[in-house]
Length: 353
Ligand code: OGA
Ligand code: NI
View (cartoon, rainbow, N blue to C red):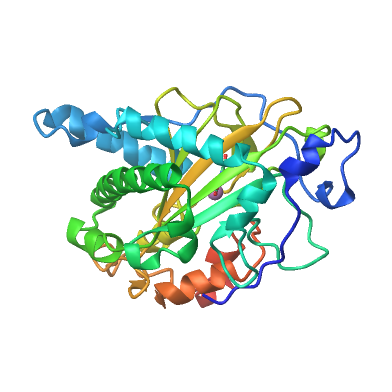
């Protein structure tokens, strides 16, 4: 994929220097830093109930809850998700261990400017652009043909952790995608066709403590270009916020739950019935925060557009069809700004103008 990100310094190293004031490139006076004071909370979905075909009543109730969560929030926490706790714990341990390595070790996996995979920021396309208060490590994890040489150079224990975690998350993701499809009337077969051999990628985020946390962004507001994202909170520092009706609401992670969100590709696939929601992360003055996002996207040789089983005379397509590879190329060559990218795929009728 043709991309050209600029390399930027490690924020973790900078944070170790105990600065009193932060460099101006991290000062985000372009952002609204306010947060909701209300105690609204994103819905919680029980995966076991959703797939327990022995109890149709509770399954249907949970499916209704899922529909509401996806439609009204675009975000939910998933409990009883079935991913083995040993696999999750190993992933947490290994991602923490990776960021704990000395910089020279991490730099062995440094992303080169023409690539997406590796250690180093994505979405930095100009020397003037403001920067996020985070270090990231991004990898394509599946299908195997998408794995880059960096993947095979990983320390064995990290690589094993990623492989095991990626595989279990893939299974869970497909189940959730099919349930979301079911809730809006998309056939499971159509979900399988586009996503089962889809691109899976992982983004490990490290947010160091910041002496002026109220001035920075850990991760700028964006929607994910994936169909579905499963976020693992690695330690107990909070930081994720989502934008609901124009107001930023914190997500307080439940123990043993995943945070799940709808991405742009599912907004398109559901013909806009579900929408991807903008989210961001903020940082703490005292504690580091680590998270691992796993993104499931369409197969790169597939076509992304509204599912044929959801488009009808009464529900005409509101997005154009685009080759999935082209869709991701477009996403990866831009700065990450809110939902501006998915908006370029909308079909605008004369009534909208
Ligand atoms: C992401 C993301 C949120 C977080 O990686 O796309 O939104 O809390 N992460 O780290
Ligand atoms: Ni995200």
